[in-house]
Length: 182
Image (cartoon, rainbow, N blue to C red; front, side):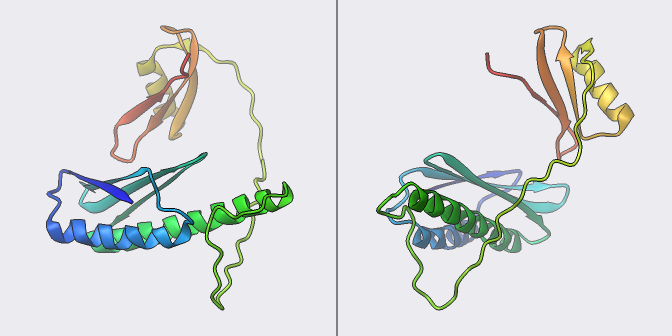
């Protein structure tokens, strides 16, 4: 597993680098073959909190976890726990799909320990459906509208590009724009 670590507003010390490497290489035990993709790790400090973001691209899925805590080492531990849950969940779904399709081999290692993890399948329950007319506006007006209604995102028709866009408020207090790739 190749781990690429970068710091943002933070110097990545050798001790931090070793700790991240030690914790993330623990995840290799879940895979049949060694990972060929690069694991991206970003360590940063946001509003006084130590933050870590980890992205692991796999075939057909991107595992990503983010955690913030007052202590960087605690953030690293928590993000690895999140990634382990994601891997187990993905492993369960993938292996179930392979068995249903008559596959002969699991993509992930089968655990032989006495401890058995029972993953609950999440039911995605749609509880509300909204329809509204998209008023053509520019990005600045969309941000103002979003702040006016008190939401963290706002869907609008971009008058400059004639496409549907989404503006959203980021965790760092700034704004982001999602545009369709055409």
